[in-house]
Length: 87
Image (tube, rainbow, N blue to C red; front, side, top):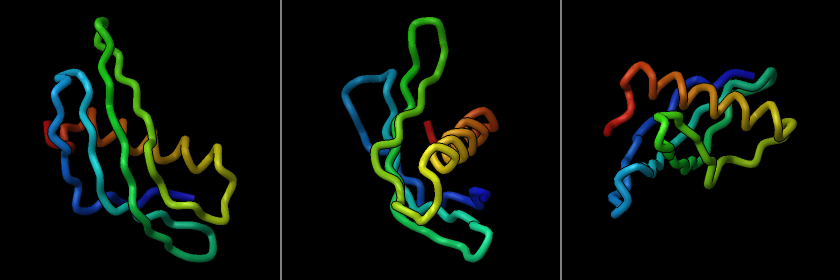
């Protein structure tokens, strides 16, 4: 299983500056097909600069939940460190 991309990423405006909320369309490549669905997540930065990603909504697929969530979080963290997410 591999996360291919997240399209149409939109940042939701909020009052708390250290929490950023996003939504978009995620595409996931499974062994038998490529699936897509809505994704909502938030990135929270603590006082020491560590980032925590929470998945608020993600597609329900016929795939084990823990590896699916781990792959999505890893992909989001990679996009964040490369600067591809809007600030």
